[in-house]
Image (cartoon, rainbow, N blue to C red):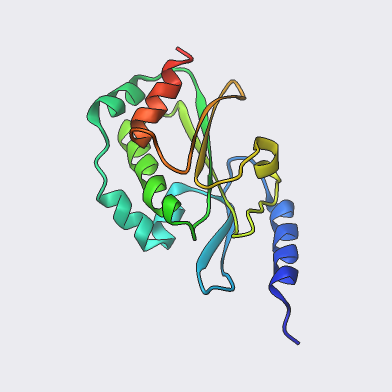
Length: 172
């Protein structure tokens, strides 16, 4: 007897709830009904780049604005970027590697990145999408002192790094 996609989704969500832990990598890679390779759960940027060649290609081919990188290098208050992605989403494949490259170049331990990967049904095991009112991916939620100070939804206005700098300058 074959189990339906919905049954597998329920099993998966139960697994992820049991494994969920802030800032730890707890994810599974599965194939959805469209034949797409999909990550669900918490994943680190390095793991995403390793498992998804298109993300890696876009990362390698992106060159962030140097003045924005310098600003991020010198940033001192701790902030967190809570990033909601769908590996099946073309906007995510385009925009997310840009953030990864920017943060890697900035090398600033005060800027933490926490990635929540969701399925096409836009569900996550911890209901963070509901908590933060996320409707579209990618959504970059910037948190300072555990309070949202800004977000980038689907695509940047100028560039990921410039938009991030603009948000951070509001809390300086």
